[in-house]
Image (cartoon, rainbow, N blue to C red; front, side, top):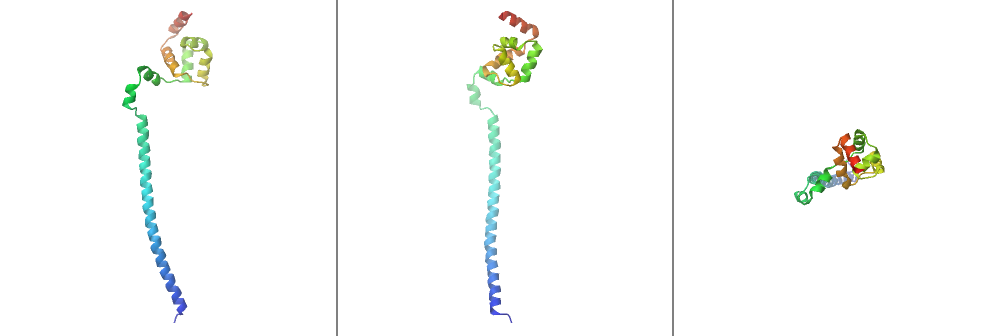
Length: 146
C-alpha cells in the first residue's frame, strides 16, 4: 500500500502538469496568432514599398505640364567622361580648343574627362550641340570664333 505522502505528491504533480499544460497551450495559441499578424504586416510593408518605388519612377502629370521645354530637354541629357574624351579625340581637338568650342576652359574639359568634376546642367546642352559635329564643322566653328 502506497504511502499517503507519495500519493499526495503524485497527485500534486499531475495537477501542476495539467495547469501548466493549459497555460502553455494558451500562450502557444497567442504566439501563433502574433506570428501570423507579423507575417501579414511584413507582406503589407513589402507591398507598400513596391508601390512607393513604382510611384517614384512614374512622373506625375501635373509636374510634366508645369516643367518648361528647356528644363525637360536638359534633364534628359546625360554626361559620360569616357564619351566626352572619345568625342574630343574623334574631332581631333585639344582640351583647350574643345573648351573654346563649348564655352568653358580647357582645364574644365580635362577635369570632366578625368572624372574629377562634372559639368553643370546649363553646360550639358552646349556639350550636346557639339556631339553632332564633324571634324570640318568643328574646325570651322573654331576658326569663326577667332
